[in-house]
Image (cartoon, rainbow, N blue to C red; front, side, top):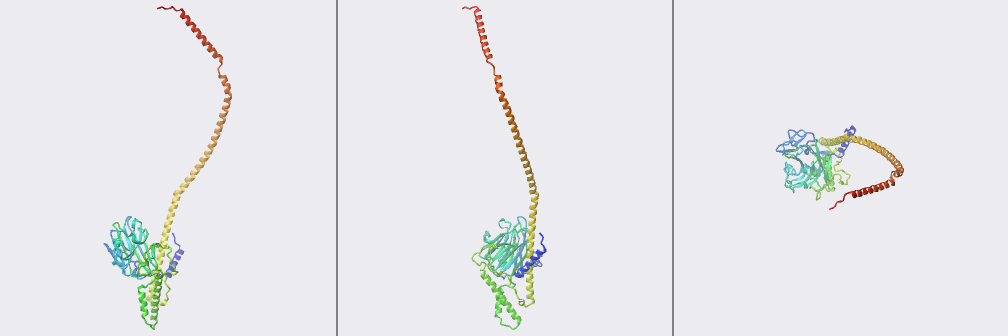
Length: 477
């Protein structure tokens, strides 16, 4: 599949427009691998790596949590900072390789206690925790599945025989031996939590609201016949650069300040007031969407809601839209550079997503083209010869039909000829039969002669018998 420069330019234009109208700011202290490099000397800033019995291997562009060999490995990477944003997006790029019957699981955590609650555990072995976990494994012998679990420290997952019934959302996804990284995107808006896999919706719910102050972490575990799990990137973005927990403090500090005469102080106060108003608008959006609570659930129960199934809040304003800010709000070159830096990173991220999407469609196009080529080859090698055989068979059937018609005509002529011959023979035979019978019947004279002759012979014999008997001598006793 070839991509023209015009279509690529249009895609980049769309990405640029998207980044400008719906900007997302990269949260550096919660992200890793976004620059293409992981760290130096096995150390990743703002993250802690732990493994048992081996420590995870940190390469230039990825972290190998569980190696191909040996098996029974456990590893984790935990953020040392907390998420202080109510609306956010988290992208995790990972890859899983292993033998045909390999086993293992990858867990993406967002918990209040971080590594203190979870450590190296998976969702199957962890005890009580407060937070969210996405589990990627081959549950139930499937080709792959992604499931989401929630806990508020009331359930001991390690004591459960089967945790499948605790999942609040799931989808099928064959993640093993793809030869490329897979991307899981978690998105928390003011009224919905959703999960996407490679740009395809996995599951969503409007009953889950992640509180502030939770920590991201990734753990992996391998079986005796191990799968190797590699993490390429964890990118966390939000619609604001500043933590929400500091907004109220900044607003109160601005309210307690007296009026100052210098222009710089007035600009700083105006900036704080603007941030306070932005926080109030976001709070109103969350309250109107029913997500103003500080816990996991905004209602009594959670439910699975697939993306795109009528989940609309009815508002024309996107909760991720950021109002344009006046240049006067940036009073220092450091703030201007930080704003430009984050916008460029956001633009780079969107362009990366565009290229990933284009590459995905290119691979899909190549697969479709290969499938069509195989079908065409099948038609050419199998169907076309069969059609030739069908045409040959049709010609033979037509020829046989002509021969049968000719044979039927010949048989009819032969039957008619035989009928005429038999009729002629019978007519001549019937005419000569009466004369032949009359000529063949013998006369009565011969019969009479025979009868009279036989009587005469009998009389002569009887006479001779009597005469001889009379001439014989008589015998006396």
